[in-house]
Length: 188
Ligand SMILES: *[C@@H]1O[C@H](CO)[C@@H](O)[C@H](O)[C@H]1NC(C)=O
Image (cartoon, rainbow, N blue to C red; front, side, top):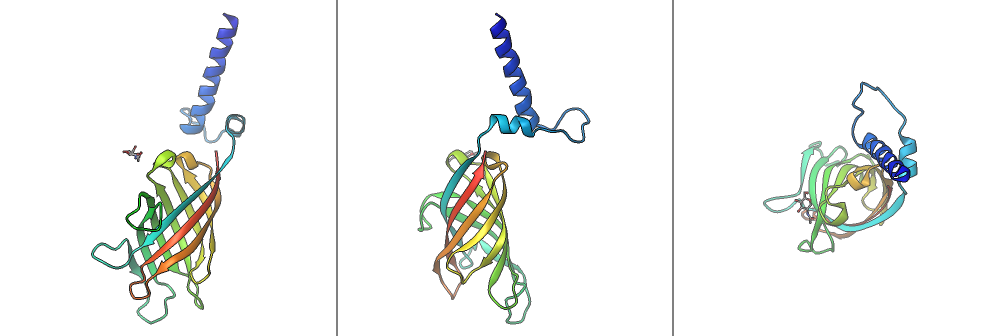
């Protein structure tokens, strides 16, 4: 009886600790320490994600559109908004695993280097509904570009890590491109 009571008390304590990390505190508390609950109850893991990013400018329904830029021939300042499809393999017809939603802009005057600001939103498997946020520099002529993963949501709450991007196909006429991504992310 006493031990049952103890288990119940522990369960309730755990539940309170867990819900305090999910819900905002109900009292008017400006800040509170919850790091203990997280470090005790959750183990950090590393997940690798592999997918192909389709940056499509051509056709009736492009997934990336130019939203700002200068009329002169310099690309510096050109800014694009994308809702690019992420697929399991290189073929556009392969299984969709998510979207890359956000912006990229030519941020260097002397080379084609992009500022990337985007969220990967996943729609398959255990990471369905979870997202990762990328904020990084992408010099597109370099074979492998590394960009920081600065956060995430859902299963990727507290995420940090890096993404490696490699262009596998590019059409200079349309600027359509397929980019292979390998993402390494630490999360709980
Ligand atoms: C992903 O989650 C959404 C929303 O909960 C659901 O409608 C959809 O069926 C899920 N997809 C897969 C492949 O599990």
